[in-house]
Structures are given as C-alpha cells and as structure tokens.
Amino acid sequence: MPTVITNPDGFIKLPVDFLQRRHLPDQMDFWLDERDGDILLHPKLTDIRKLYIEPTTVCNLICRTCIRNVWLDPIESMEMTTFQKIVDSLPELTQLERVVFTSFGEPLSHPHILDMIAAIRKHNVAVTIGTNGLLLNDQVIRAMITLGVDQVMFSIDGGKPETYADIRGAVLTKVLSHIQQLNRAKIELGSLYPAVGIEFVALKSNIHELQDVKQIAAKLNVSHLLVSHVLPYTEEMRQEVLYSYQPAEPYKTTGWAMQAGAWVIWGIEELPRMYWGAERRCHFVNEHSTVIGWDGSVSPCYALSHSYSYYAIDGRKKYVNRYILGNVNQQSLADIWCSEEYVRFRSEVKGFRFPSCPNCDLRDSCDLRARNEACWGWNPSCADCLWAQDIVRCP
Image (tube, rainbow, N blue to C red):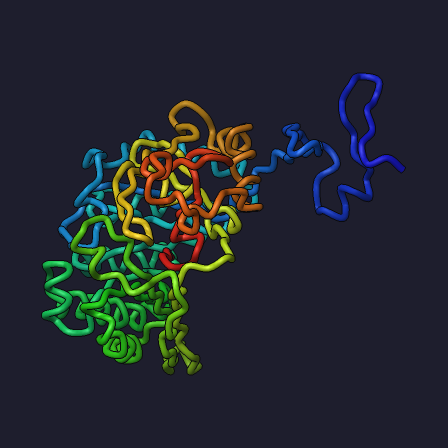
C-alpha cells in the first residue's frame, strides 16, 4: 500500500493506519519539504504545551550574571492589549499545559501581573512564576494562592548573605522571609500550592555554597532545586564558568525531606551537565515550548529571544540577534506556531542538523560563528547552544 495517495483534486492523502500510528488527526495540513532527496511532510499541529511569557524587561535588581548588562533591547512592559491577544489564542491551543511568567525581567514588577495570572487560570492552565522574590508581599502571596498558581521559582545564587549580595546586590534574608511568609499563607489557606522551587546559577565563586542552598531548601520546604551554569555575557562571568570541553567530576547530589500536607516527600535536585558532549537536545523544542516577548514577538527559545553578546564555550565572543517568527498583535499564536518557517525550524532542531562549531578546526577564524551563523544548516544556528547541551537550564 503506498504511503502517500493523491486524490483527484490533487491533495495528498495519508492512509488511516499511518495517521493512527502517529496519533495524527484524519484531516490535517502539512508543509512539504525536501532533504537529501527525501520528501518530508511536516504536520501543522497546534501542539504548544508550554508557553513562556515575558511580562516585562523591567527589573528591580542589576545582577552581575544577567543578560541585561549587555543586551540591545529596550526596557519595557507588555501592554494589556498585547496580553489579551495571547489570551484570545488559548482556545486553539488544546494541548497547552503550562504558562511560565518569567524571562529576563522581574514579572512581579508588572502592574497587572495578577490580572495576567487570573486570565490564564480561567483556561485551567498551570502557572509558574519565576521571580527574585523581593517584591512579594502578603497581598500578592494570597492572590497567587487563591488564583491557583502551581509553582514559584525563586532565584537564589548564594547560600550566604554576603555571596548573594555580591551577585545580586540585594538582601538574602528578605527573600527567605518572603518564602516563609508564602509557606505560612499556604497553611492558613489550606493549600499545598504553589510549590516552592529554587534556581541556583553556579559560579566558581559560589559553588561551594550549593550545600548551604540545599539546607535552605530543606528548611523552607522547597520541592525543587534547579542548578544551572552561567551563560557568560561579560568577561567577568567568563572567568566564573565551571564547565569545559573535557569530562569533569559531577556535582554530588543529595535530596531532602519536605512536608506536603500529611505526607513527607523527597525534594528534587536537577543538576546541569559539566562538559561539552556529542548529545545535543533542545528542551524548548522537544517540550513543545515557545517564548513571547514583552512586545508580543514570538521566539523559539530563551537563547534567541533577545539581542546580546556572550562568550562561547571556547571563549569566542558571539553576537546573537533576536529571532522573531511572528507577533501576536498581527497573527494568532496558533498561526505563528504552524507557519512554514517555524514548523521547518522545529524539524531541523529536533534532528539537530547543525554543525558542531566548537569542535571545528576553523572555529577561531570563522566570522560566521561570531554572528551566530554556520557554514551549513539553519540560520540562526543552534550549533553553539549551551541550553541544548544541558549546561544552561531554565524552569
């Protein structure tokens, strides 16, 4: 039986058993492509599962590790008319599971962040908030609990006050007191949620305090500790990296007990890879994620959601231009997701059809690499991506 059938109208039809094996609907559209002489059919599926929304690029801190030290993008907040366009797109996204309010600004600095959360929760979608925690107060905490926020991830890059203050220019005890306040409010309101998580950016100057952060996690009933390496935007941060080309001794991992109502469960620690390897996998694409910036522009991942410079794993300075695949002010999110460019991009990334630029003998002299391009494959190139190496991680 042929795998592709053309009906009298010229439309391609696929056998029912082929569609059933791949859990595809009987009636659907494809983008037709060709690769190395093979014909490829890319299904146009509105299968977004995870949506990252950047409410604002405004932040109340100036952290030494942050992209905001080098980027070229404006400091702005999302207009509610733009956000409403996102909300209007949700009914078409039948597989959407989670919205993450975070990115490179502080989401709690947006004046309408609680209205945004409420609008998403009306669609019965789980919500994660990524925050530095300094702007939390009793009103915001109780609203998040009442609205059903599923998870709050706190950025804590030091186990000791002086280390945290050196990296973030803020007071650690204030953040910890806000987590305690959240835990008390959960008890008062009889809720297990939001679960509390911590994100720790590992540096040479703070890695010795990872155990202190684990102790904080155990004390504050934290369910999840996510450890990421730093993406070095500055020369100062390049001197702080812990990962390398060569295999290195991994972090030692230990969990901790935490209370969940009447149950005691084990806290989870996620650790990054320590060195560059052959295996490359994009979590953003494989988890069916997309990123919407403050202006409504849609990008495929954090790495391509802003314009900035950084240092690659071998110390080469690179310049990244924001990769925009559409804007929700002009198109529905479903239409952007199913556009030919975006569908083909995801196909290339799933197969990771990019050269391994860090291993190339010409890497030091290649001017393509300096502007985040490559001599073959899709451009912008994912060849140097530290997220795809599981070296840099996000919630």
